[in-house]
Length: 269
Image 1: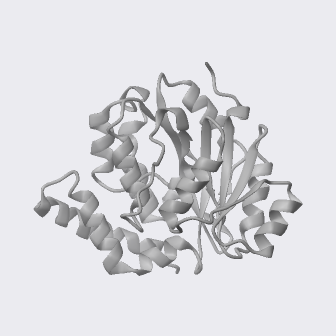
Image 2: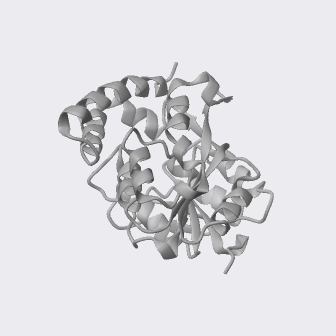
Image 3: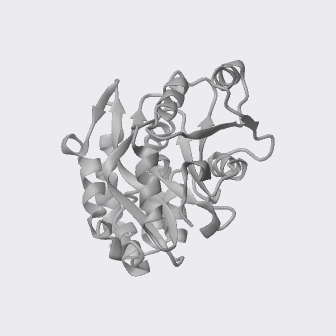
């Protein structure tokens, strides 16, 4: 059975009063094929409610345990679709994002996730991998997954993930029926998406990779990415724990030292 636009839901994760939330919504409304949306938040306020009402987007409020993992799992549970994408409030999606994700999952026998390359949005400007060291490292790390035959290889997926976390979470479309009910675990703060890919990489199925930047991840002073990277000690310890899932400890420490240097490019310039 082929997946259709009706099978997919964008779950917009809204937090406090982001000035970029409406821009995210507009990018989803401008998809080249019809896109369904919901909005989820653990910090209800008039700003979020007004935008949800303006664009007639169902709004779900998480009144249970809070945290990034809990909020993302809540959003996934609220998205009643066979496919879903966690759209982070500060990010934007190119018009062909959904069309290309549908084509990717429909081309696989048992898709687990589909994802694309991404660019960064800094001070309103799009920054691609040819101008950013970390984006280039991630693009290179994903080269083994370009051939479709390797996307279903557990061994190859784990080799890719053993070098860094090259998969941008908001670029991912999840195939719900082939995944566990709770994808994210609260043990991590900065690496919870990397931990999720590591867990999913063990499952039978495909990581459908589209080698094209189809969404923009915004970097700004108030973003969660900037805040987490600013916590050098916490970030480094989590990265090391992830590397130790793939490598002996001495090698894990060496790789972690190299990757930590690359992360500094995510700091605001």
